[in-house]
Image (cartoon, rainbow, N blue to C red):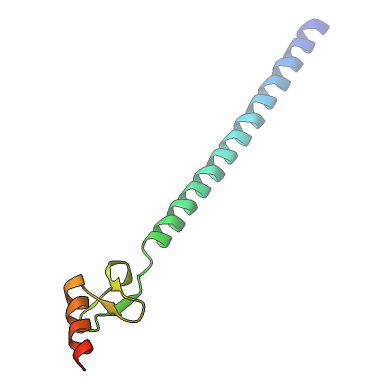
Length: 92
């Protein structure tokens, strides 16, 4: 009789331990998924930040700074406008 009670007690402890470990694993998995979602949202936010716009000194068109040509003083929308601008201002 004692052996059966002991076995039932051991099985009960095993089931409780298994339940607790499964809950811990579920909670950690949820936290990890939330962190991944947070990181993805943050990366998306960083990738979608607006670029600074600059104005072409020759024609006045606005374009993203990453696409502009810079001569050290002014910005231009193309190399042709940069050359044209310098040719016109060299005459003056």
